[in-house]
Length: 335
Ligand code: CP
Ligand code: NVA
Image 1 (tube, protein in one colour):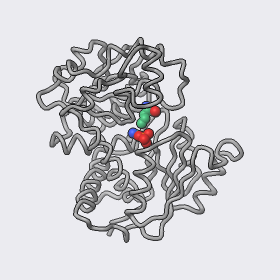
Image 2 (cartoon, rainbow, N blue to C red):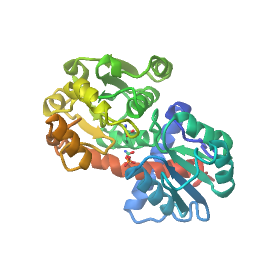
Image 3 (cartoon, helix red, strand yellow):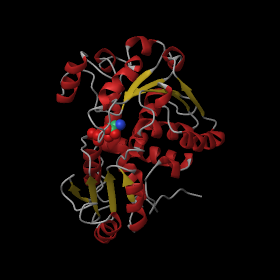
Image 4 (cartoon, protein in one colour):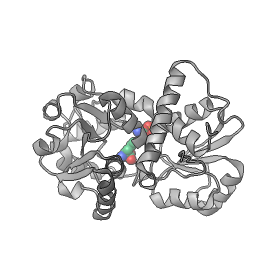
């Protein structure tokens, strides 16, 4: 039977089968090719309206939703962290019921996963997770598309994530690998491994897909033969500045360097969700760098700027994959 995701929420890849994820990736590849060929898709969802709620800042995710929305012919409302009553003067449930009457889809970026789940529970339209503390599923679609484009395959690909694997990126990368039959290694101090409950859930997905999940403290072992080496900033949005000290002490040995990359497979690539502190050209990078005597943090500038790095292909794919995900859940391109 043909796959239809019409009316579905997009809160975490845990809720989707391998076939449904492949369906969104194939649609994204098709929409990307159309865009490159100058073929417009503005009729696809013409007349629909979407709202983007951002309680945390963003460059890629916001711009991707806006450009993708416009490319599909939709009108887009952006609510910035100070631009709505959410959670302060109006409950999530009430907000969901109001926005669900006005809009055809709701994107939410913010704090706990339970917030986006509550929005989804009370809104009668698709709700899309644009990043929570726990998950970043739209990033996963972009990463999968990029890996497929760059390596020509997904199944069996070995991805090593270095850094804080307990947070949105580590969690989501593990879920996505487990769903897609890939090999996931979290390479970090053991306190930074994902929580046991999520590991157990992912082990169940892995039984179906053939994925493997590995947790490794040793950098050499953890990165040996990896096809993809992935990292993220060490302190995420919403975390206090005080945690920089403990993160640097714990994660400095897990910085992605040229030695780490050379330990991977012959055609290894480097990915990063971005933003990145690979140099001192940001105010936070500069402040933290000066305080701790560092010129680069989670990845060296040499790796970031090297032939290994596919981070800007990955960033571009945010837009194509978000477009596909919205089109699919809003029922565009269905017969
Ligand atoms: N990767 C990502 O989500 O980037 P933004 O925070 O800029 O949206
Ligand atoms: N872990 C990062 C991801 C940014 C895309 C954060 O939550 O800030």
